[in-house]
Image 1 (spheres, rainbow, N blue to C red):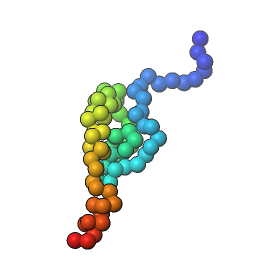
Image 2: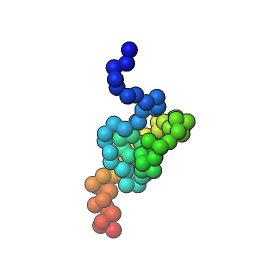
Image 3: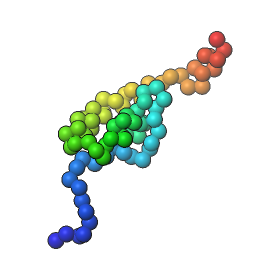
Image 4: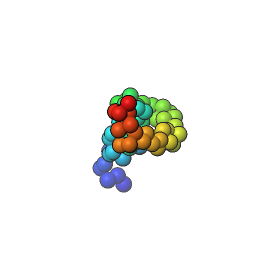
Length: 79
């Protein structure tokens, strides 16, 4: 018996509603997708989505690099 809710058989979005694009890496810090991937997500094929989902874990370390924070900014502005 159906509950009347329309459902789609597709891969869920990796979005966690933390939508901030990293300025250097150009990927969302929440879901790790590029702006293009986020924009096209609803129009992608299931295979295209699976491929992207498989690459997301490899992207996470790109956001964990420390740039030095305030100390590095101050050192750059002095020189």
